[in-house]
Image (cartoon, rainbow, N blue to C red):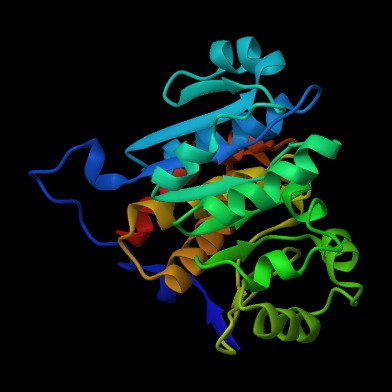
Length: 275
């Protein structure tokens, strides 16, 4: 298993060119959020901004649009009606797609998630309730034409697969479904369809708070959309970046008091180490 550490990450990210604009750094789409879960959508979108995306669009149910429109400045916020989503066309045009952070588990979402996967033509990150919506529908993963990246914690992995949440089973699931699986935990592991396995050698218990996984999903979305690295390297770099920012945050604020909002603020410092 390859270790993702400071030496692996240093100078991994290419320098940005002088004659570039926002369109050169990815148009990414995050379909996230539900009533009571506005924070998840916020963390995912804002971490994508902080990781360097050119344009971040956040699609949220119309009921929570006013909240996110006030909380976020940089992302484009788009409301939708789950019964008439109007976002499938956006998914087809995006450079990278994120589905699931705080999405909820309504019947409408269980229908929307497979539709989004089917129509997207870009690397797609599936997190949290996006993963829950696929329980019993593994065939959707196998039939996808684009790279899929799943980011389950132990409980989500067990619900989706019926397997124990271990690196060995995650690797087997990745090979069987043709997906990349990032099994979250202390020293998270990443498993690719071709048998590659990686372990993140950073992170701390201060990150064990609701919202940290949403920050990770946004980091992965951003690097995938920028297309500065191949898909596997993008996932690995984002996973290390997230954990490294967590360590910098803990060093400054302490593990007890740090929050996902604080973690996002340390992403630029961690990114500088990768340039």
